[in-house]
Amino acid sequence: GENVEQHPSTLSVQEGDSAVIKCTYSDSASNYFPWYKQELGKRPQLIIDIRSNVGEKKDQRIAVTLNKTAKHFSLHITETQPEDSAVYFCAASPPLYNFGNEKLTFGTGTRLTIIP
Amino acid sequence: DGGITQSPKYLFRKEGQNVTLSCEQNLNHDAMYWYRQDPGQGLRLIYYSQIVNDFQKGDIAEGYSVSREKKESFPLTVTSAQKNPTAFYLCASSPGPQSGRQFGQGTRLTVV
Image 1 (cartoon, each protein chain N blue to C red):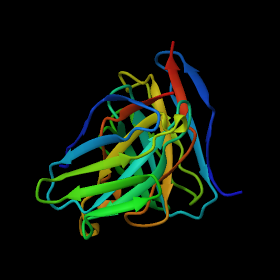
Image 2: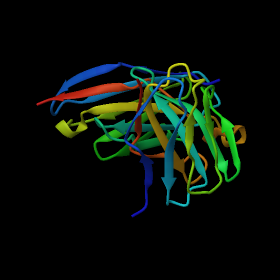
Image 3: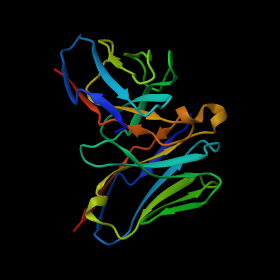
Image 4: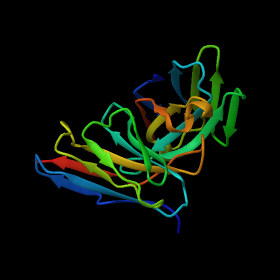
């Protein structure tokens, strides 16, 4: 089955600097890669996702890049703000023909702290 | 206001007792899921259901049971067979294949 590794487990950056979180996956057939943000005491929320037919996707200050050859994908947050402090989870899913939607495998999470 | 609701937020259980966690959604989503979240281990899938009256085991189903009698509801029972039930439990739903999961606010279960 799929195995997703996420690094680092904790990350502290100065407000205004950029943060990068990296994930690797094992199943080369995986083709859907969402990222979730979980603020303290709250539910995880989808912040961005990418499919394997594109290499990069941006949404304001966040972006995700995907390298299918190396089987890794990364979350980039620019101009970080205090409200970016949270735990971030990456995930990977195999194609639909393999019930991909149900086999979303999560990474272990990165606790991001923005230092004012 | 559409959403997914879990109850209760906190739950205490004595060893040897079964306990049921509630999950209700009014989003008209077909698929529903139960995850367990432990520190440093991410989210692990317990059970999922793609359609009413059908559900499948996830990666850590032992000691848990579910039912899906209505589209809106997907309760999880933590049985006495679950060796280490103290955890944060998250219910989620999704509208279709490879679309984002919408999560409930979670239930923190503590065995005393």
